[in-house]
Length: 255
Image 1 (tube, rainbow, N blue to C red):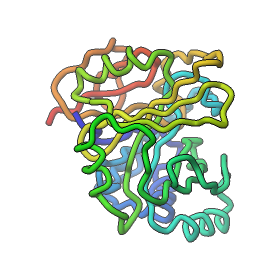
Image 2: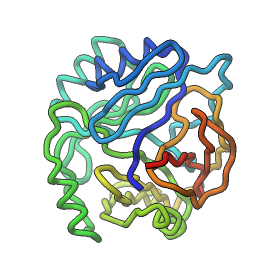
Image 3: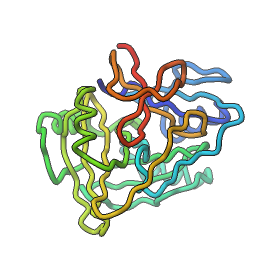
Image 4: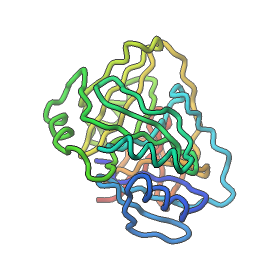
């Protein structure tokens, strides 16, 4: 079950549509004052307006289990960063050269969802599924920003692998982070043309976040499929919402 879309709560649909069109090359599929669907090449972004939103309990320290960021592949990182700076968009991390021979940067959308741009084909330190890696690389440099992954921090990689295996995900590859004394490792679970980017921290204490469906920002991932292995915790965008072992929320979108 590949990722079909990413669900995000927003305070102003028109403002968010303009942000994603301007800075991430999104193509509008449908839009009104309450909801918008944007095409980002390999998946869609579904924006839903929330009235009187709850205060978000998301913490951007990577040690909170569950959702971390939404990642996009680009071929023109510097130009996009310049445009983001010109627009006064807040950054979480200015561009750097990262492990895996890529350049990355992190910034926030208007409602606080953390977004990543990645430039260059990621050179994995560990390859567990060569055909999946070749398929990943075969997508090439995008003509416009391409949805690539959703990242989450987990307590137990094996439990995460087992959970998402039921949704058709296989362990594709890994990247080591030798300079991080928290025991930070990144592994990639793959299905279709995008990944779940899994963070583990062997030597650091993680916090837990209770599910939030009415806060601004990221809400859930929508997987194409028929059934879910997780526990239902509520509804969003008219669909039942489930959770994985670490609190990443998702819905199942019938194929």
